[in-house]
Image (cartoon, rainbow, N blue to C red; front, side, top):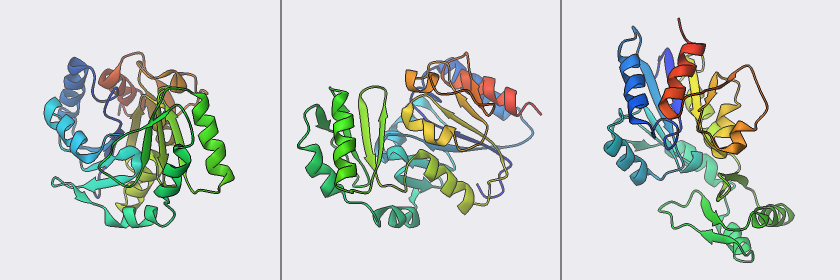
Length: 239
């Protein structure tokens, strides 16, 4: 990934994945270009789930795989864990405090996860989200709260998230000057879509993204999933 001149940083479900014809069109388009497009997948899935999706959909192996809503980073074809990133996040992470507060709130069902770097919940009552936010802040528990799709709540270490993880990768690998496109479809993508790089909200995006304020660096695609990425690539990087 070092020295890459063109990069796609994309969410998976509902963004790169979801329209097989559009995906094939995008991959064929990249194959025809005189440059290589480096791939960074940034997903809410955990590692095993993301790898299974990559295999099931026949996706190219990415240069970097960011999982668990930006709390885990893996690089290379063998998906080596970035221990430096993990150590940075763990400095302020107190998951036991998060769990204790969550237990006092109705409307939150914890998700079973194979990682310790986040706590995630299915939400059945949207008021529970604000109750949880208030409690976390009142107890001064370090965190980042992300609510997306009207039903998914993630509590993350404060220095994490999809945007923070992408910024870290660009800086660490010295590729901040590459021609980049960021793509997403839901609320947990907002942080990376608003970093100031060319970005696309795909046509099938969740309402929380569709209702986000207009910005010249955020392209609103008409097409869904990978077709929207194709639209935006030609909008920003036609040359």
